[in-house]
Image 1 (cartoon, helix red, strand yellow):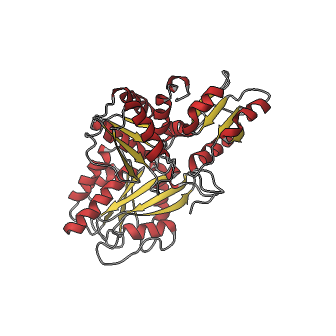
Image 2 (tube, one colour):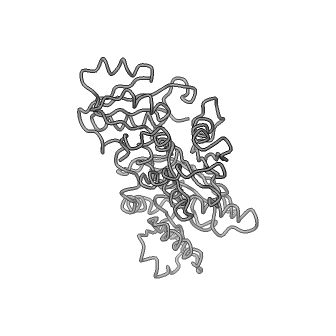
Image 3 (cartoon, helix red, strand yellow):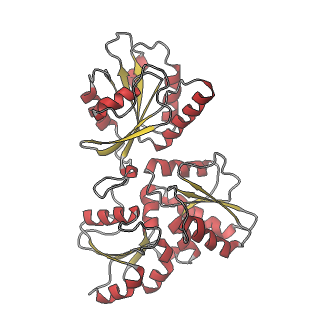
Length: 394
């Protein structure tokens, strides 16, 4: 369960551990975390599905280690495990490729290095089992690397330093709101608390945005939708920025002072997590939709749909109101995304607060490659409400 003092997984540097079966990937994670996080066995293929472990690594801060199945797995199940491992590439900010000193064939490692290079994922090579003396191939020297013994916990401090040096500096934008506000700026948050917000808690984008505003030394006032007008009347001056839930975009826009900028949590997340320019360009496809088209809605959260669910009820209703009741709309949740997106005329992505930025950008890249427009919940709602050109999107 997520607690108030935990950094969300989506905001952590994701470090993928890749290598052959029994190369020591799980032992390496246990050594890095200094606990028995991953199951270790001499039996090849012990790790099946990817396993994630949150750690703190100073000065980077919160990280996630991803233990994956060996990319030399065999058989029908083995191929399925390899596919799961390949899927982890789209979530990886930094890859650690584990090789051993007892290897003589590195052809699979070369193939994976090519994949990492193609996806522009920085890579660090951990040469494990240093107690077994063998020669290391010359190509290793072309990459950041270090020698370790995962079982004996030798070279782990050096590996941590290499991780710090190799980690991408832009794995996540520095701030959600700093491009709009700064110290002493007044910001009004409009946060309807409906059945989508668990009792006693705020939804993650609201929490992340509030914390980000406080970090930027802004003055934050929060209200529910029904208290918006009262709040504006009580304030001595108009807020510099109003951030609203996208579902009440039009209502808030009608009451937004002309001196105030307006945006939504979802639009902020579109910029923070994804490719805002691609989302804006994708919104243009809405005007071209017909009842013969198919739309794909992608939710990060896997949940049971409730009455008023934005992705499964409200957005489909808005789209069908504009295009026609026969518009075909499909909803996928979590990591479930079709390999072939070409049957769809538009992909609509949620704010992506549960995904790291690398994963949201990888989905956008797939859409671009297949020439399928992609947009975001908040941008779509603003577009359908006729106010997209009147809100702050960058």
